[in-house]
Image 1 (cartoon, rainbow, N blue to C red):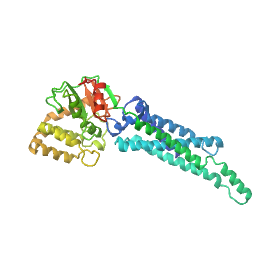
Image 2: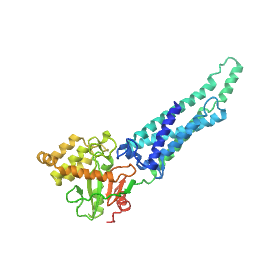
Image 3: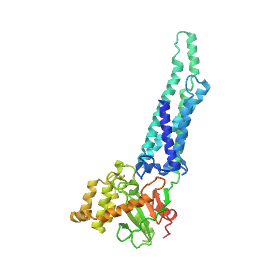
Image 4: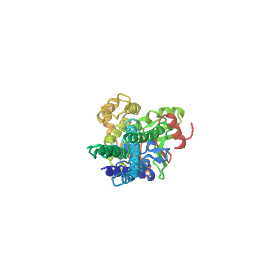
Length: 400
């Protein structure tokens, strides 16, 4: 059981490390879905270079090797060293699993199935190591019956020969927790990267007529950046409310084309498989474009409503029924029904999706995606300052 859990966690860590180093999509984690967002976030590496999955792989490999020397046939001194190593590393595994689970729940707000499976396997492994350690301590003293003074002395000697006493064992485990805590503190306090994927398209990307497509800012602005997004993407929601501020800082010389790219196989062939989080993406994108066709003046109000909080302090995508009702409320049912059948919407969405496909690199998609000329970047923005830095350094948008 112990070896099996160790091998599972080691195998998953190796897969994640390979993905980080050589790129490519992991089965079920490509196309910018929730898993892809986690694997490509700044939390997946230390100092932007060392994959945390690589550290995990080293820890699980060391635990696997140590587990070969904890059996009763091994010399006592070596067994003691092996158990010390196991307990120290178990503390690191427990602390790391807790930290990265917290990150996925409250910070990234997306989940990686491979990561969570590795964390669960790691925590089960930790529990098994602790249980085995406790059993090992007890068995040395409990197997000798106390019938006379001689046996009592033998029990005392057996107790003295325990592999590791409870207090040192707990100290080793807590030391491992402390080491994991150092990584957590470092990641939490370090200056975050604002880019987790960028590149340059080798193909000629489609050119738009900015007067005929959804755009924030003036279609006559000298610099126009395309924004690929999905109405059910939490990272897209964060970037949406920075757009007007960035345009203001550029004194109106910048505009953003809104390119809906649903992360759903029903309309996007570049997505490897569907996930529940994006099950309505195709329909929501079409409704948004319908509003644009029916009445461009109310489109900004629709966009803002799509990305505002419904309640509380966290954002959740609007339901399909609520979005359709809001669209009809804004443009009127007659105009909505008339615009719904306009073939332009399908052509425009497919153009946006084709751009998405042309900017996939090493199997990595990801949205939101900013494109200027042939350059593109998938940002992890925190504020408008980060946004402008990306525009100028990664996309080479001239300064305002």
